[in-house]
Image (cartoon, rainbow, N blue to C red; front, side, top):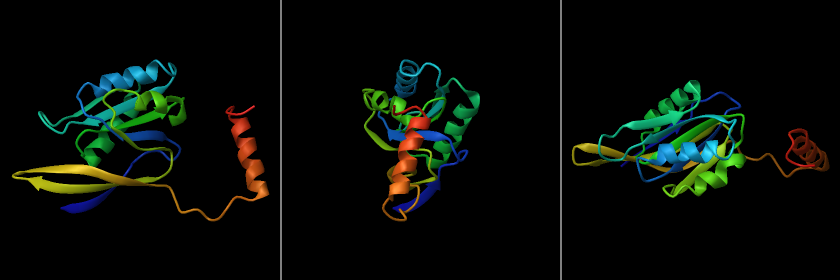
Length: 164
Protein backbone atom coordinates (compact mmCIF):
# COMPACT_ATOMS: atom_id res chain seq x y z
CA UNK A 1 0.00 0.00 0.00
CA UNK A 2 1.16 3.49 -0.83
CA UNK A 3 0.09 6.71 0.89
CA UNK A 4 -0.39 9.86 -1.18
CA UNK A 5 -1.42 13.42 -0.42
CA UNK A 6 -3.58 15.27 -2.96
CA UNK A 7 -4.12 19.03 -2.73
CA UNK A 8 -7.62 20.30 -3.41
CA UNK A 9 -7.20 22.80 -6.23
CA UNK A 10 -9.59 25.73 -5.96
CA UNK A 11 -9.84 29.51 -5.68
CA UNK A 12 -8.86 30.74 -2.22
CA UNK A 13 -12.37 31.55 -0.96
CA UNK A 14 -14.23 28.67 -2.68
CA UNK A 15 -16.27 26.41 -0.39
CA UNK A 16 -16.58 22.69 -1.01
CA UNK A 17 -17.82 19.46 0.54
CA UNK A 18 -15.87 16.21 0.19
CA UNK A 19 -17.61 12.95 1.01
CA UNK A 20 -18.21 9.31 0.26
CA UNK A 21 -21.27 7.74 -1.30
CA UNK A 22 -22.12 4.35 -2.75
CA UNK A 23 -24.14 4.50 -5.93
CA UNK A 24 -24.05 5.97 -9.46
CA UNK A 25 -27.30 7.93 -8.97
CA UNK A 26 -25.60 9.97 -6.24
CA UNK A 27 -24.74 12.86 -8.58
CA UNK A 28 -28.40 13.36 -9.47
CA UNK A 29 -29.62 12.98 -5.88
CA UNK A 30 -26.97 15.43 -4.62
CA UNK A 31 -28.00 17.89 -7.36
CA UNK A 32 -31.65 17.68 -6.27
CA UNK A 33 -30.74 18.07 -2.59
CA UNK A 34 -28.90 21.33 -3.32
CA UNK A 35 -31.44 22.96 -5.66
CA UNK A 36 -34.30 22.03 -3.33
CA UNK A 37 -32.48 23.65 -0.39
CA UNK A 38 -30.81 26.73 -1.90
CA UNK A 39 -32.31 27.29 -5.38
CA UNK A 40 -29.98 30.22 -6.20
CA UNK A 41 -26.81 28.22 -5.40
CA UNK A 42 -24.28 27.71 -8.18
CA UNK A 43 -22.41 24.40 -7.93
CA UNK A 44 -20.58 21.56 -9.59
CA UNK A 45 -20.53 17.94 -8.39
CA UNK A 46 -18.22 15.08 -9.37
CA UNK A 47 -18.29 11.44 -8.22
CA UNK A 48 -15.73 8.64 -8.75
CA UNK A 49 -17.13 5.24 -9.69
CA UNK A 50 -15.44 2.35 -7.87
CA UNK A 51 -16.55 -0.37 -10.31
CA UNK A 52 -18.09 -0.81 -13.75
CA UNK A 53 -16.97 1.84 -16.24
CA UNK A 54 -14.81 3.58 -13.58
CA UNK A 55 -15.79 7.05 -14.75
CA UNK A 56 -15.89 10.39 -12.99
CA UNK A 57 -19.59 11.23 -13.17
CA UNK A 58 -20.50 14.92 -12.93
CA UNK A 59 -23.38 17.35 -12.92
CA UNK A 60 -23.98 20.96 -11.92
CA UNK A 61 -25.55 24.24 -12.88
CA UNK A 62 -22.24 26.09 -13.31
CA UNK A 63 -19.80 24.81 -15.96
CA UNK A 64 -16.72 26.30 -14.24
CA UNK A 65 -17.57 24.63 -10.92
CA UNK A 66 -18.42 21.34 -12.65
CA UNK A 67 -15.02 21.32 -14.40
CA UNK A 68 -13.29 22.15 -11.09
CA UNK A 69 -15.07 19.23 -9.42
CA UNK A 70 -14.11 16.87 -12.28
CA UNK A 71 -10.45 17.97 -12.14
CA UNK A 72 -10.22 17.40 -8.37
CA UNK A 73 -11.97 14.01 -8.52
CA UNK A 74 -9.57 12.85 -11.23
CA UNK A 75 -6.68 13.82 -8.92
CA UNK A 76 -8.21 12.16 -5.85
CA UNK A 77 -9.36 9.09 -7.79
CA UNK A 78 -10.83 7.36 -4.73
CA UNK A 79 -13.77 5.10 -5.45
CA UNK A 80 -17.22 6.29 -4.46
CA UNK A 81 -16.00 9.67 -3.30
CA UNK A 82 -17.64 12.96 -4.32
CA UNK A 83 -16.90 16.65 -4.20
CA UNK A 84 -19.23 19.64 -4.44
CA UNK A 85 -17.90 23.14 -5.20
CA UNK A 86 -20.34 25.98 -4.55
CA UNK A 87 -21.05 29.70 -4.95
CA UNK A 88 -23.93 31.77 -3.56
CA UNK A 89 -24.31 29.39 -0.62
CA UNK A 90 -22.19 27.93 2.16
CA UNK A 91 -21.75 24.31 3.23
CA UNK A 92 -23.82 24.96 6.35
CA UNK A 93 -26.79 25.83 4.09
CA UNK A 94 -26.82 22.39 2.45
CA UNK A 95 -24.76 20.06 4.67
CA UNK A 96 -27.64 18.41 6.52
CA UNK A 97 -29.49 17.81 3.23
CA UNK A 98 -26.33 16.28 1.75
CA UNK A 99 -25.92 14.01 4.80
CA UNK A 100 -29.54 12.90 4.41
CA UNK A 101 -29.14 11.76 0.79
CA UNK A 102 -29.64 7.98 1.16
CA UNK A 103 -26.42 7.05 -0.66
CA UNK A 104 -24.12 9.35 1.36
CA UNK A 105 -21.94 7.33 3.74
CA UNK A 106 -19.52 9.91 5.10
CA UNK A 107 -18.51 13.57 4.96
CA UNK A 108 -14.76 14.18 5.22
CA UNK A 109 -14.89 17.97 5.28
CA UNK A 110 -16.90 21.05 4.40
CA UNK A 111 -14.61 24.06 4.16
CA UNK A 112 -13.08 26.92 2.19
CA UNK A 113 -9.66 26.30 3.76
CA UNK A 114 -6.64 24.98 1.90
CA UNK A 115 -7.14 21.21 2.10
CA UNK A 116 -5.04 18.11 1.52
CA UNK A 117 -6.63 14.69 1.06
CA UNK A 118 -4.74 11.70 2.45
CA UNK A 119 -5.12 8.77 0.06
CA UNK A 120 -4.21 5.08 0.38
CA UNK A 121 -3.58 3.28 -2.90
CA UNK A 122 -3.32 -0.49 -3.27
CA UNK A 123 -3.46 -3.09 -6.03
CA UNK A 124 -6.19 -5.65 -6.61
CA UNK A 125 -4.51 -7.97 -9.09
CA UNK A 126 -3.82 -5.86 -12.18
CA UNK A 127 -6.06 -2.96 -11.07
CA UNK A 128 -5.38 -0.26 -8.48
CA UNK A 129 -7.84 1.07 -5.95
CA UNK A 130 -7.78 4.20 -3.80
CA UNK A 131 -9.48 5.25 -0.60
CA UNK A 132 -9.61 8.48 1.37
CA UNK A 133 -8.10 8.09 4.83
CA UNK A 134 -8.82 11.64 5.93
CA UNK A 135 -8.13 15.30 5.24
CA UNK A 136 -5.91 18.08 6.50
CA UNK A 137 -8.26 21.07 6.71
CA UNK A 138 -6.54 24.42 7.18
CA UNK A 139 -3.85 25.25 9.71
CA UNK A 140 -2.77 24.69 13.35
CA UNK A 141 -4.42 27.07 15.92
CA UNK A 142 -2.27 29.94 17.20
CA UNK A 143 -3.91 30.14 20.63
CA UNK A 144 -7.23 30.65 22.40
CA UNK A 145 -9.40 33.60 21.31
CA UNK A 146 -9.15 36.84 23.27
CA UNK A 147 -11.95 39.26 24.12
CA UNK A 148 -11.12 41.19 20.92
CA UNK A 149 -11.32 37.93 18.94
CA UNK A 150 -14.73 37.19 20.46
CA UNK A 151 -15.96 40.67 19.47
CA UNK A 152 -14.65 40.15 15.91
CA UNK A 153 -16.35 36.70 15.66
CA UNK A 154 -19.71 38.05 16.85
CA UNK A 155 -19.50 41.06 14.52
CA UNK A 156 -18.52 38.89 11.56
CA UNK A 157 -21.48 36.52 12.07
CA UNK A 158 -23.86 39.47 12.19
CA UNK A 159 -22.24 41.19 9.20
CA UNK A 160 -22.83 38.13 7.01
CA UNK A 161 -26.38 37.71 8.30
CA UNK A 162 -26.06 34.49 10.34
CA UNK A 163 -26.89 36.11 13.68
CA UNK A 164 -29.17 38.97 14.68
